[in-house]
Each structure stands twice: as structure tokens, then as C-alpha cells.
Image (cartoon, rainbow, N blue to C red; front, side):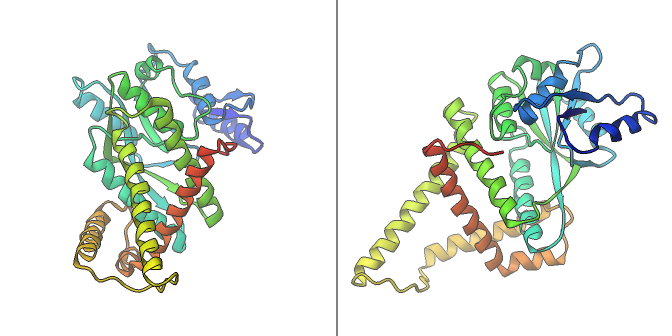
Length: 310
């Protein structure tokens, strides 16, 4: 593990664990502003391909199922001809409260998306990924300075000819973001980081789907703005909100809602309260409205080149 200038008891705890597990090594790195990407690159320099060919990279708060390493190795062994560069785990959130449950349902959607594209996933998330060491060396590890360095690394692996896959049997837990303020800060970093990757790598076959998602979101905002503007103009400058029961948008919403029910299959640790929350519709509608606002603000911050915050 890498102790990147921590101010807690990390180094002391690891040295204590080494008494029982002597194979653990703690690398102490001076905090130089390179953050997580720099810390991982520092660790990779100390690894030799003669000692290991696979590397598990995880966040400090990740909790692994006992079979995570075993499942990853099995997949590499099964797909020796596929040239897999990295494997991504499934995520289960732990926590409590309404905000936790909303994030838990959202992460179930993330898992479902990875299942749908499991042989060519868009991002190997930072919570837990297992990589070929030679693949990481080929792309020169992580790019320091990226807000979401995991997305950047995944694109670099794909451009170098490596495959990025998903293994739903690799189960890893992490804590949900506890407060609304922390959630907004996290998503600002995610959304700005996604735009940064597109600007750095351009629109190509590896980033086309993400670029389409951004275009679709912005186009939807324009359409909503035009509809609201039309209503205001048609009502003599006054807009009175009312439900619009046209069959086409109602049908589109209903199909999307049915799809969200199917995605419940991929929510780890699902219980009846989660199902009830999805059936209620309104809480998630307000949650995603908030995230849409955060996304718009992230676009603005990136457009004006505001200072990046991790």
C-alpha cells in the first residue's frame, strides 16, 4: 500500500499488520499534489513483472468479498486470447438513510450498464479493478491531474488495444456519500472529469457513447427550454404549470420506468424499502433533477476553466 502523506494512523496500523502478514509492504510517499494517480504510479514503479503479472488497484475504503482475487484470476485464465487489460468489479453500497438508498439504486443502474457492455465497459472504476501489469506499463500508468483518472486510464488501455471487461462475481463494498454537500462535490468532480477526458482524447469509438450521452442531455435541455418558452409566450407572458398527458411522452416515461424495475436485479443488497422507493417515483425524480442541475453547473465550471477541486 502507499501512504501518500496521510495525517492519520495509516503507517502505524500497516506496520502493526506486517507483524502478522510480513508480505505487506507500505510505501511512504511525500505529498506532492499528484494525489491518487501519483500514489498508484509510485507503487507501480516498485513492481516487477517477474514477481507478478496482475495488479489489484483499490480505494482505501473498499471492502472485498473473499473471492474477488480468485474470480479475477479465473477470468484472465479463461480469456487468454482476448488480451484483457483490466477487469472491473461490481459495487455494493453500505450506509443508511434516504440519500444512501437513492445512491444505492443509482449504483444498481451502473452495474446494469456494465452488464450490458460487459466485454467493453466504459470505465473501470477506482473502487476495485484488476489489471495486467504490462498493460499499465504500456500506457504509462495513470495521468496525473485528471479529476477522474480511472476513466482516462480505461480509454488509454482501449486505445492501446486492450479490452476492459466487467465481472459481476467480483463483489466489493464501499460507503455511500453521507451528506448532500459531499454528493454534490463528488458529482461535480465526476461530470467535469468526464468532459476533461473527452477534451483530451476526442470523440472516437472508445468515447462515442459518452459523447452521445452529453449531447443527448444538452439537447433535452434545449427542448425543455423551448417547450417552457412556448408555453410562456402562448399564455401572454405567464406560465401556469400543468400536467401534459400526451400519449407519446407518457409511453416513453412508462417504458423507462419499467426498465428501471428490471435494473433492480443488479442492486446489491436490495430490500423491500429499495423496491418501494423506486415504485414511489417522486424521490428518484427529485434526486435526478438535482444531479441534472449539478451537471449543468459542472459544464459551466469547465467552460470558464474554473479551478479543479478533488
